Length: 111
Image 1 (cartoon, rainbow, N blue to C red):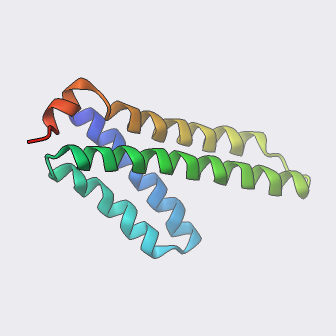
Image 2 (tube, rainbow, N blue to C red):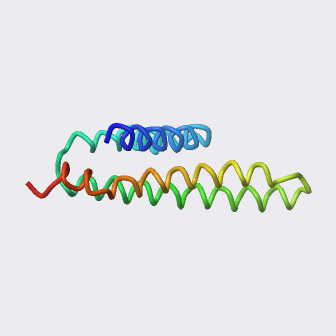
């Protein structure tokens, strides 16, 4: 379970860095605060964490598509950037999917 939580925290930090670069400090704070939901041992917190991870993966895919479009428009290479951002999106998606394991569901029960 610690590995699953660590992967999620890394994904949240990566998204926070993305928003920091864009100057969206409120979203940075949200990215930094989201992993705090692990402190609540309730099923609803686990569901919110999963949904946040899936939303983050979608954000990365959107950023990838936007970057590719801009780079193609100006005639610059885009494949390496697309692979890197796609890998980050996949990493974030996997971090969310790993929260949906039996061990996690048992730990974050309906108590």
